[in-house]
Length: 306
Image 1 (cartoon, helix red, strand yellow):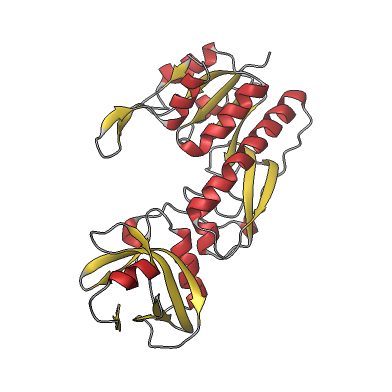
Image 2 (spheres, rainbow, N blue to C red):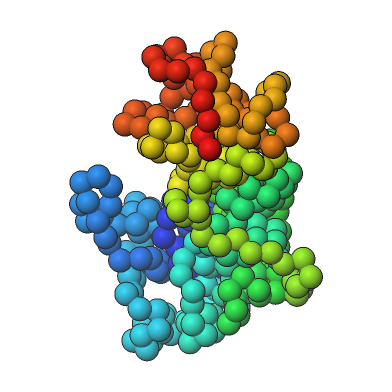
């Protein structure tokens, strides 16, 4: 039986752990230390650790430092054949070099496009019509290793980052199983990434999620969808933050940033036309459809965000 170690932390990695365990039997899971989570800030395990426990995997490591020699020693004692990494931290050579058949990562983009922490967000923000997952062998530079497998998925203009995240999870699980099988039986051939096609996908933050209404409306719509539901695109409205989760193209013209409520719609002008803000969250309110917002709003029905 192959000795497989799985490394991951968030929900995105859970289906891959489940699939690998069902096919091969994962021996060891490495995840982030337990930490305060949620509104109550109760100390709780990561999604991957919780899934491992539910699968009956008891050999779970939660190192605070991946560079600690004692962590590498613990892994070496387990003699891994393959190490699978999904949505985890950057591994030092002393760790990823331990697997006799290879250590691979499954990344949520078609590398070399969108290297970095937020490939799903950036694929939508850049208007991509398809994306996917890539498995590659780890090296010393993040997301640049030789490619093993890729699987693709279409993106339509209404897809949000949250929806794409959910759609890519089973694809990442399938890719992880196929990659692990190919490494174990020697059927996979790795090939280098084309550096000329490389693009970055840095982490997205609330501070960089403010909407620029002077841009063209398709770009603004993609920006909104690429940040939905988190950290969420926003704009200032009467000095407070208005969060916008979903938008669509609509008829009309106006000065960029000008908005109006009309026929149950909340419309705003961009550089080349209007957008309908379809799902949003008013200050101090819950997330709502535009029709619900317009129905309950008692202020002026037009104005400007700029």
